[in-house]
Image 1 (tube, rainbow, N blue to C red):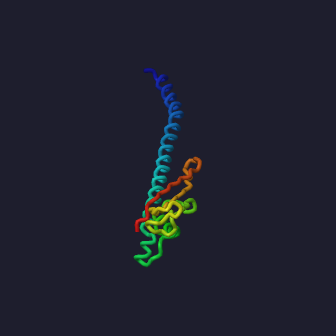
Image 2 (cartoon, rainbow, N blue to C red; image 1 turned 60 degrees about the horizontal axis):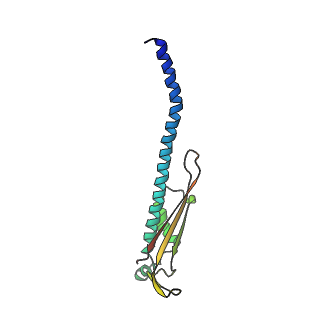
Image 3 (cartoon, helix red, strand yellow; image 1 turned 180 degrees about the horizontal axis):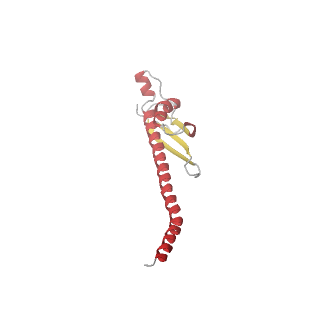
Length: 150
């Protein structure tokens, strides 16, 4: 094969790689960033479940039997959310903890419907994630509800 044909082919490979490599790297980095976002969302959901589980066993019955105070939203944050949220920016993480009935007892009397109801605690976590590569910010929210059992 003549040498001028080989040299022309080398130039064609360089041009093809100039167009192909940026697209390959875009897909590669996009896949990694989407994976990081999915991991963070799963962690937010796991932390919300763990915090709701912790709050569900630290209600009024727990306070009565142990002499310790029942869980308050600040307690849920400091004892159940913050220890598990080490990789999150605390300024971007907000939380909400609510009980169906503020007595925090496992069962309460609903005067409006005149029936006994199972008390539940709901923990909502919201995190403002700023991905890499100048992508737009994403707000991740997860809510977990659990019955008060103790």
